[in-house]
Image 1: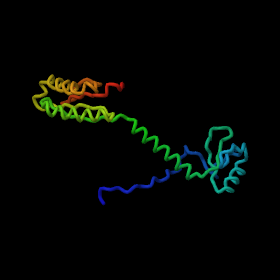
Image 2: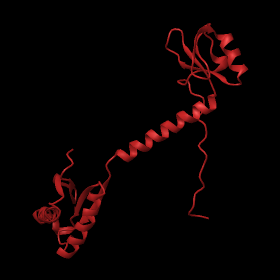
Image 3: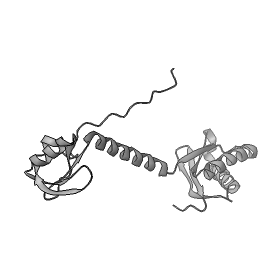
Length: 189
């Protein structure tokens, strides 16, 4: 099917220098060891720690390289990378969700009252959903000579929503467009 996408498995990222070293890549003579159950074993020789990890069929992973001596833990490295990836994805998702979205309403200086009311109803829905509303008023031809009509149209539009919204950004010109921004009254930014 053309419109559907397959869900892809997230591949494991390539080994990174900033990640902790594992198994034979740990070349320090002694490490502070934490076993597979999370209990601290203490400072042991690196070869002994590797042998203990092999006995339980897991990896020796360096978790704190800057400590003296470095801290290593016996764990499944693949599972550890997967969990880290999962945490990063969740953090990115939360970051996207917390960003305030801006919806745009386009007007013209001659937009009639009926159309203005319909657009105000749409803007009200956007504001109730937690979005900000950008008002974009487009001038054409000789309308540029009467910018006051544009400001008046934006003020009328904002007056229709004054019970729940306030002008966060006053009307300003950018080329042939006049822009303004509405936000909820109780939200301050």
